[in-house]
Image (tube, rainbow over all chains, first blue to last red; front, side):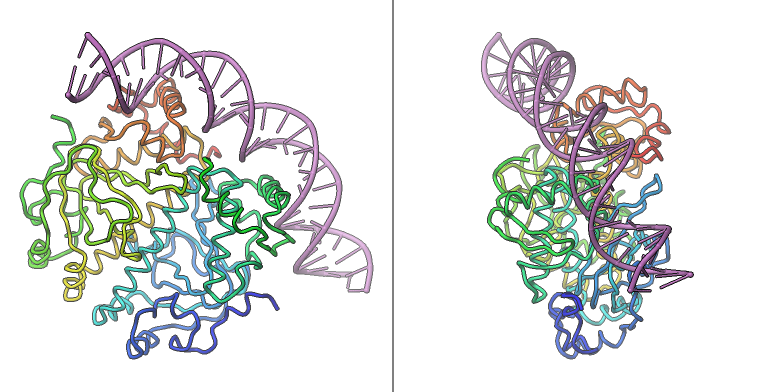
Amino acid sequence: MTRTAALSESHDSCQHCRLRTLCLPDNLTKSDIGKLEGIIQRRKPVSRGASLFQSGQRFQAIYAVRSGAVKTLMPMANGDEHVSGFHLPGEIIGLDAIVMRRHPSSAVALETASLCEFPYSALEALSDRMPALQRQLMRVMSRELLAEQNTNRLLARRSAEQRLAHVLLKFSERFASRGLSARRFRLPMSRLDLGNYLGLVPETMSRTFRRLEEQDMVNIDRKEVEIVDIDAMKSLAFGTEGA
Amino acid sequence: MTRTAALSESHDSCQHCRLRTLCLPDNLTKSDIGKLEGIIQRRKPVSRGASLFQSGQRFQAIYAVRSGAVKTLMPMANGDEHVSGFHLPGEIIGLDAIVMRRHPSSAVALETASLCEFPYSALEALSDRMPALQRQLMRVMSRELLAEQNTNRLLARRSAEQRLAHVLLKFSERFASRGLSARRFRLPMSRLDLGNYLGLVPETMSRTFRRLEEQDMVNIDRKEVEIVDIDAMKSLAFGTEGA
DNA sequence: CGGCCGTTTGAGGGCCGTCAATGAATGTGG
DNA sequence: CCACATTCATTGACGGCCCTCAAACGGCCG
């Protein structure tokens, strides 16, 4: 049993879900949450490597991760794919499909994942009568936008070491806000995927991990990460030293 | 009088604004547009170099560019700033501020710009009673999200030449959808700003422009751009040749 | 005209990608 | 339970792209 198994929801209702405050039901009243639950489709878990939806597929629903982890992939014109994000429990997937009514990305489970499916037409209809839901949707989208902008800045201006330190700190925060340890956690993705996301080849990933270890900032054992010197990590990732 | 002056709105009403279909009023009925106009604050034009809002400032409104051009800047921990986007008439600015209720970015006019200001509380109140507006807001945010993901992919996986070709083609499209020429246009920003956006230093920008000229893909005269061989540009920017 | 900012050009170096090969881990089938 | 295949991770040598540093040039606005 892995650490992240602890991220599962406790019950089948949003009301008692421990991820509630990270997810769509945040800021809704008990009665509104009840109505939201009414439109949720429970899906059978997606097993590791299986895809939730494919790029190009018609958009019908957005999804919240309940347990496990998911990566999203954007096709590149030359055939291979760019990893556009990693999604932990409580996070919403599929918002980039709303404009085109078609998914621009594919979503693939990194480990067995269970999800809540929100059919989008039902969600629209519900939010017509529920201003709080509509505002929560806007907040979630704004949050995503901000996260993408931060990633842009990271990719445009930072070295490999800074990119890795940054992303490790972000995972630390995200695990912590889910009640897990900020110091020790297990990365759900391969170095290949993480490198793809960061714009780095696997060889560089390997060497960069090693350099962080040599500076006693982290201990790495396969996918297990221990943050040893968080201050040094922060000053590397965000610090005043230029790129 | 510059080329982009032609991008000004014709009248003071959204109904007759030639940018309507790119902007918030798209997909609204005539009557809904009338109500939307009711909350718009007209601002006096922002002159070149002046800022529309500053990073850290309380979020009160989103803005649509009416004429001119605007850049957005995110502060970096080390003091300097990352150019997170360029905004042409019809585009919406400030959506990244909704979650935190504070602007994460600053917005600065690249050339004298006039804007429509939508106070956000009024916009929320209005969209409570106007499902079409709410859906348009979601579409706009989704479009922004998609654009940021594309930028991520560009920064993570493409060479300087590919980045420049890509961004020039994108500007070409954006000008074309505003009724201007797709072949000849004037970039509203300095090479410094464009390079900052693309994660490239000015020296590299200069050399990369020159290389595109030497390959007879474009003609560059200061800020004036002429796309000569659009197919070659596309195959460079999106082509099957790897990064 | 003069100052300033933006742009260009050149020389040199460092980071990271490419290529190649080995090693480790996981999963599969016998 | 082990042999094997496959995927992932690591290590080293090498090269290229782009950054750094330095200087000169040009346009723009006062």
